[in-house]
Image (tube, rainbow, N blue to C red; front, side, top):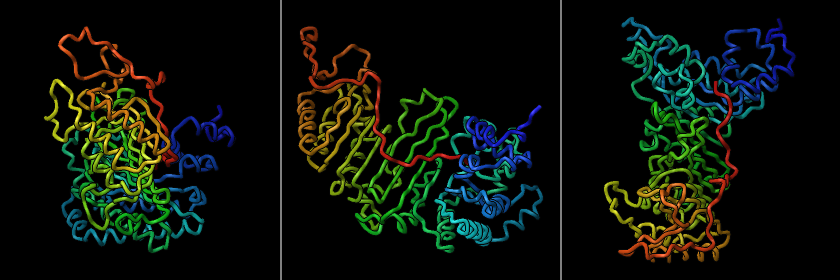
Length: 484
């Protein structure tokens, strides 16, 4: 019977199209002869995006890869935010004490030296990879659970370090013996950048893949990256740099996993925040990622310091998220002098920062009205797209219309003024997808005592897309590729 090893390269390439890159990499680990089948298609599918943890075993794998001819396919390298003190898990207290006696900085320097050597080898292959960091999932017992596994990266060598952990070791002591008690995120960023500087590798982009619960952004662990590569001063972006952050939330058994992303392109002066599609999890379609100062990668809009991103973005896209009117207003006005293109798509907006305020029988209109006035009076936009901005208290209540795109300042002023007048008259548009009643495309929130006498009107010029939602996607680099 023909085996996989007997397949011609053309058929092997077809096999690669039907399986994941991780499966192929695992196959190579158990069958050394499979190396003979490594071809151009294999390199493109499996080797463009590699991840490593800070252990000698993992980093030695990077060093070996850098001297292999297939190393030329590497496009991105990611390094874990967690530092591993001991290479092997052991119950021997003397061995543990010996591992702890050496300072973490000595071990950082030793292991970072392997990264420096690997980058030098890649330069000889004319490879200049994008660099980044990622959070190692803290729960190794879900490692065999494919659904949870999809949320985060694990890195080369994860199986070797955590492979002996069994579900009955629920205390998690094995992790504490092997790693520090907390992720050393800022050290990971610093040491990756130091390695690039030592080999004079141009840092033209950086990507992070972090877990939402670790709150890296709120701790401002990325200050070094901002200061050196993104901003040169208030309102000034350094040229030709790309930053991509994928934030994953492990969720729970009911909600599953979901991801959101932040993308910054200093050459285009663009910023994007959006939830990523949840493949195979239709119940997450209407779930909104939280958009606030802890998730934006930026400083709080009200912060004034040398690293603040004030009045520096020309294009902004915010989509598939939830936020408050106050925060979104502060964020947009902090970019008022530079902002010209704005896309707001499928946003659930809390009209109050305090969730206990505003749940009266009559939906308040003041906050929505002030938001529309801010767009009209405080921003000088040349392009505005607004698609289904819902009220968090009543998802059927739209702030603005269903799907509006205005391509000139005159159109923007006229369109916003129309919605401002409607809000002033206690009127708002209705999203039929969330409405229980067969209402028109707009209703008045001010009812008379005898509602049967009120005639239902339909606002001309508004319509709902029969196909549901069509979202304009900017040319943004997505996080793709196999992970080692």
